[in-house]
Image 1 (cartoon, rainbow, N blue to C red):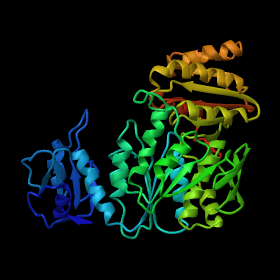
Image 2 (image 1 turned 90 degrees about the vertical axis):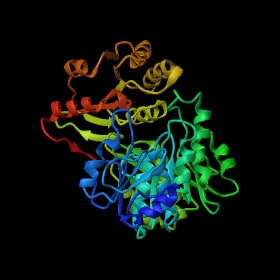
Image 3 (image 1 turned 180 degrees about the horizontal axis):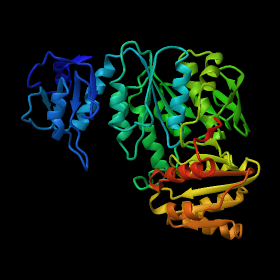
Image 4 (image 1 turned 180 degrees about the vertical axis):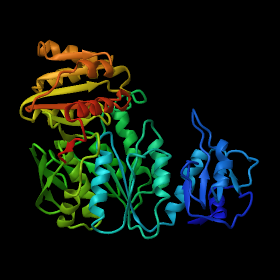
Length: 459
């Protein structure tokens, strides 16, 4: 991969010993480190990687990046900030890679869009993609450092929770294609409003190469602002509602996914998706836009999209063999993604029940957003709203004021599990909440109670 001397040069430091030694991987976890790896000693609120240097030395590490010299028989590169140094080494490695790199950000849909793009690009050649949602200033460098000369493409998901974070991640990755899926009300504890979030999302364009392309959601209110940031570089937009977009689509929902018709510069064709929700229609258009730019044919786009299955916890439809359908969407929640989920549930036949946990990081507007959630669910024709947590009680109150007797509130998951009634064959139940709500535990309980064994995942 590279020598300790090269890494030291990138960091502006020197290796304490064996500068010519080469490392083949980079690790921040002493438990999984392989021989010949460079260890980066990160510090967190409950851990300090420097405490494990003896372990990594015994495991055969080639060296370590540290913030102070430690009395361990291991070559060490001393820097002021090991977390920052991880990004610097990744940026140095990126400069040596001939691959086409796609960066993806947005308030909602970025993980799904990343998976869609990667699925299509794998039809073209060797493709590296972010695993899961390892999209912060640790996950992005570690993903990039897994790239090898044989990779033709890399699809890197980039998240942020504060202004300036995407500027740093973009400087590390230097994307050839930068995708912005949308800007919505998330992380409002750090931002005053959605306009500030849109500006922060636009930071991904700060290190877009001069010959690069910005791929922008033409339906988003911030689209013109992002275009202004991208100019004079090439821009391609995608949309379900904007007829002037370069790549346009039409979405028809089905009980198990949807039919997407594509028009515009990527040709005219259609494909079926095993993914619920109109939001996945716009996600697919983003992926098609990127794939078209990189030379994919409509057939390759169709093949890639057809291979996708829902990410666990994201609108995942599960058949409860004892009766009813469960839609597991508990991976995370904000007002925009909740609106998408309610739209999906409202289109289902039978009795529709929404289980809502608290939505986190909404700042001073949290109470208003939760009240609005209850009102939106009632207006959409949801039959029952079950809420768990202190903030979601406000949603239950708003729902009950519009649909008397349809709301039930539980203080916590344990109470809900103990008192929640069973479901019959015409029930659709969608579970939604922020990660902090821990609703995956409720999903597991519902599956076990209904089936007594592993569920049958419909898609």
